[in-house]
Image (cartoon, one colour):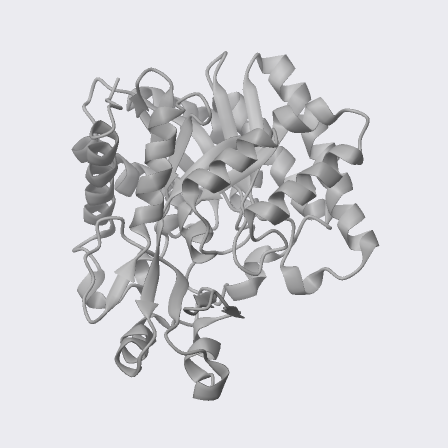
Amino acid sequence: MQFNGSLHLGYSTNIHRGNTWEETFSSLQQATLAVRQQACPADTPYGIGLRLSNTASEELAIEANLDALKRWLDQHNCYVFTINGFPYGNFHETRVKEQVYVPDWQSTKRLDYTKRLFSLLAELSPKGAEGSVSTLPGSFKPWISKPSELQDIQQHLLLCAEHIEALSERYDCDFHLGLEPEPFGYLETTDEMIVFMDSLRSATSQPDLINRRIGVNYDTCHMAIQFETAAESLKRLIEEKIRLSKIHLSSALKVQASASTKAALSQFNDPIYLHQVVSRDTNGQIQRWQDLDLALGAKEEQQHCEQEWRIHFHVPLYAELVAGLETTVEHLEDTLDFLAQNPSYCTHLEFETYTWEVLPPNMRANSVVDQLVAEHQWCQTALKARGISLQ
């Protein structure tokens, strides 16, 4: 969906199961089309945030499959403007946790996968379009300890930037990659993103190539967990010439830590996804736990008094929580305020609440389609309130 002529909005299809192209295409034909019919006027092109696993991307690269997708998109007045390239393998039904970072950017497997995603996006994009792919923040922070490991990450990103540049010139499009900072990723914060991008530019004789083709995928859930201020973070990224490749519209959980709120949080402790926790006390002291079970199991003396906890668990944008549970939706709203005042800084918005299957039953909509339609409506209302209207 297009707003004010240049701003695109869609949802990430990583909410649906699908490790093969057949499974992925089936979810598009059933769930995505149902959402499209309820959330978007028939005569308005509908933007899709496509998620492809490595296996699905290999299968979609087969000419017959790619042609079938193109026909389906044309038939239903849909288009793909962004691809979620963070999860490489199966993202549902099995333990994901820190394995979502495998392979990381040290590996040529991650490079080859991401290059393939851009090649597919180039085939799907209209001439002159802008297209983005989001990816993991280099690696999982505990895995990086040597300069040589960082050098491998940088070298592979530079090779990817060259591939993106070549495709942009060949297809007359503007393609770009967004690194997605998150807690316990190699890149977690705005400060770390700025330092890394400076280092990446210094590693090449073409710093302008980096500015054009590699930027940040700013996830409002992830940055809120770090207790960052949206306007300040976004302003600094722009000042440092870091491209806002895409903005993920998402909300995290937050609580004032107490026995009752910790008990309420236990229902979000699932065996599938990593739910990192960052806390801050009244003195500004920060604590971090790699997963929610570790935070819940920490001894009281290891926890500061009067802590606010922020938990990496994507909750529906419209969620109204109880039992002392809140969300970080204010960070998302502040991000939209910034974007409304600076509309040229980013043109890709994607809402991403992939946790539908592991949400507590009382928070889960009747169906995944119902949730996605409600989130579409929430986004459209929020944009309209800021003077951003459907094209």
